[in-house]
Length: 390
Image 1 (cartoon, helix red, strand yellow):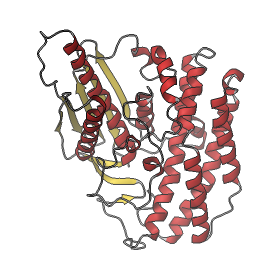
Image 2 (cartoon, helix red, strand yellow):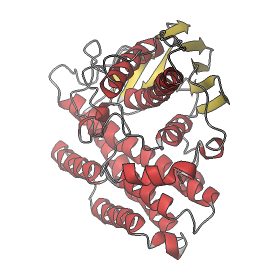
Image 3 (tube, one colour):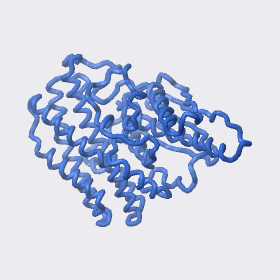
Image 4 (spheres, one colour):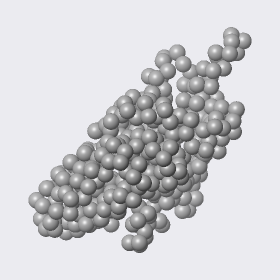
């Protein structure tokens, strides 16, 4: 955002050189992390594939010379786009390798490794895609060089005034249509009611916010529908009535926004609660492995669930840059990978927020997403020493 608020050629080239130096540094730290894994984990074919991808990316970026012209920047952007696409298999390969290694290493060690790798992955993709978006903005016909962008516009990938209710409404519509396609036209789909501070807004990357909200709403809608189906299967004595709605409450404070999503889907089984934020699978590890094999690439966006129409942003001045997280991957909408919640937590915590779930077995779940209003929080890279944790 520093380079993009008042974008000029000099600022664009400065952004390019920042990305050029940061990417190989951050990738090198993650290569070291993989080298320090126990042999049984590091030698896993899926983990080894990720290691090779990182190693190739490191050597590619370290050879890029200082960017001095717009032509140099265009060539650099081409390299970035290629790398972003090449690294789309990273999430499913990492998740598969971690699940396969769950009997060799303590679960907390594996989860810590995954959280570090994925948090770092977000940081790299954010600065890379931000620079691509800034470059696209700079070359666009509508952009006036040196002009200061207003609060209704994007700065690269960052939407300056992300209105929570608008995004929730779009995600709710997408999730309900996905549920309809999954469960059939005759199934009752729960309503999703939004209340509270409906004008709450904050700067955020839309694809990240959509992913978190989308995953939470999908979990709630699925739980409510399947509880309704279980009750209907108990016998004809159980009346067929519309399911209880999902309540979304938005609370805005000076430095944060809190979003609560409440459902009456029966809650989370007690044997799954210890693995709620884990990538290792728990009781569902075998099913996770089978499903991950069906997803060779994963970007962790709502768009890859074929909901681009429902998530259309015709009302927003979206950069013309085609986000690599939006169109290069796809997965069946009914396929449960079991990594949506931990991935959502990584997204939330990367932007200095939190994600918590409270389950009451037999009743439902309350999910609490706390979002810091960016501008009063730095990216989780306060000092160079903290790069190891990113």
